[in-house]
Amino acid sequence: MPSCSVRETSKCIVYPEKKSTVSDLRLSVSDLPMLSCHYIQKGVLLTRPPPSFSFDDLVSSLRRSLSSTLSLFPALAGRFTTTPSGHIYITCNDAGVEFVSASAKHVAVSDVLSPGKDVPLLVREFFVFERLVSYNGHHKPLAAVQVTELDDGVFVGCTVNHSVTDGTSFWHFFNTFADVTSGACKIKHLPDFSRHTVFDSPAVLPVPPGGPRVTFDADQPLRERIFHFSREAISRLKQRTNYRVNGIETAVKTEEILGKVSNDGRKFNGNGEEANGKITKGFLKSDTNKKNYDRTAEISSFQSLSAQLWRSVTRARNLDPSKTTTFRMAVNCRHRLEPKMDPYYFGNAIQSIPTMASAGDLLTKDLRWSADQLHRNVVAHDDATVRRGIAAWESDPRVFPLGNPDGASITMGSSPRFPMYDNDFGWGKPLAVRSGGANKFDGKISAFPGREGNGSVDLEVVLAPETMAGIENDPEFMQYVSQVSYDC
Image (tube, rainbow, N blue to C red; front, side, top):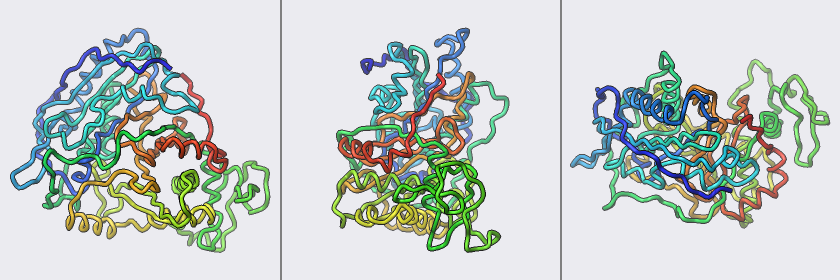
């Protein structure tokens, strides 16, 4: 592995091409808890541009397109301001964002991808503002971009204050930045900066002297790996969890399913008969009329995958059977509210759904049971639940407690639905998505879409070294993991 040395070649502030007309934006009930979190750090690994387009040309092009994009997202070019009353606002004052160009020409694309191995620490050097807490947006830029030249590729890393964006808004900005760079004639969707939502509140977050700090040990020894799950593997998982839910056989379409895997390893076809893993067609037998079939009764592919991860990590941690484990899932609330929020609302509109179970129940009951616990909580998180969560926070304003203080928690963030591979800067879609060192602790999982799309998923898994070794040796988990073939 090459030495972890990325050399900065230039740094500047990029200002919006046009002056902002957006009024100051008060941080919401969903924004304020993120003040103790690190800035979000996500980026894309790309092949080299065509030979006719030098790295210097690329840097100039990215600076220009970033300036144009900031005119559409003026909040990112602002700074935080705290009023005498304690309210924190984004002042859209066109103060600009940081832009860095860097060189790591001794590093190859294959070094970054490292399939089947831990993500190299080198990746963290592809981002600026390492471990910067979001409250520092009072005197630091709210966003930054670093473009790093590799031997045979380029990495574009984007860092954004977590109190300004959630994942939905982050990727909206990143996608737009790529579209502008590639010369798109028309921007698909403009951000909505409206603050007339249920998340807008007069509540004040008490801030300690010096500002809030992260709520976890950022120096804890950790391992980080990307596990890839193909569409076929996830279909098998989904069939395991949906074969029988609440005593009713569900109508799961099985054109792409390779055959249900039972707890004892036997495989079944779409009719519940033993099969040999071949593709089957039709629907599982159902005790209910298909016309009356309730889609909310079906456990999703992602819930099925999450349940398998929950079981395997719990097993690897060797917890006492009576120990309570918690699986937290971050969910987008935009479509859960009535009336629905604009899907391109710019800001945080997320809440955390905790699901708890004893380690004993997770490991003695089957995967269907674990998945159903997650499924029930996700389905129940409706408009009323969102509003109760907001009211509870207003009665006791506090920062979001990231971390794993009891050694038995998992936190799932990001989403395989985010359009991460839509970031085509003009010469092809990314080879891979990677993140920096922000907000990483034992049990932090981030979900990405697989590069091939079509329902595949990559999980960025961060665990204590002994726990990572445990899931690597867990056949129930590893049977679903496959290697990725990168067409570099």
